[in-house]
Image (cartoon, rainbow, N blue to C red; front, side, top):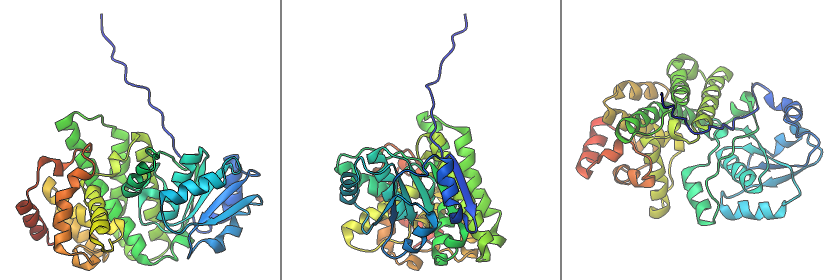
Length: 356
């Protein structure tokens, strides 16, 4: 008799509606209706410097608006108490900080949220997860792992195009890092026997390939370049939702970036943009994986994306210390750095790749 081994039940939470392109925000009332939020009471989150002038475009007649300053667990908890049993959904209208705040608030309150990004610097616009450092802060307040996919995403490329180009370039750096994340995942399958999703891995890998194959479009700062990046970032969000973790999109290159953010708090310096740090990490981790790291470096350089620590205002000591600390940021996540990297090897790595 053949024994049939049953795999555990899988359940995905992915966005129901995604609209992106020029003037997509004008579709907001229609989108809210499609996801059955029209007429319900919402809370629109905006940043202190950008986003307020866009609120009227949502045409939400029964919405409150809150300006979010610092990204903090206290802020999330205070708003959750203030609007308990008052609102039915959250709209995060802004950059990565606002999106993360909205995601965490919706998670705590148990309501759906809509993502309306104003920059395309990282894949948080579509992923179910918040940044690692923010999740660490939330954990200290008893808030467990945030896993909240947006019910809808409205990515207006004409709005995103208004942001400084540096943010879009950071988004490209974030996407290139997916090549490393998938390699690390495959390594963990071979060494640790981790579960692997071909579909999620393919989506993440293809998101990186989209930008690698569209260098000419990305060199031109126009709506088409924004569209390429946004489309790829959306694919990453779906990949993570399918995988049930950030595994397909976050490997050693992200652990390196997270380590820099943690060091910034301890040592009192300002970190670079997340995607810029990931890009540096991608170059070095590609070297460790035996990949064609020079091609990755040349591609980034061709778009004027920083490829050295100096270009993003970081010291060599920070890079080396981040490489040493990276494996301990998430001990559960096996990557090429989990194989053991001595300080001398880290020094050789930054020199060989020209990062520092």
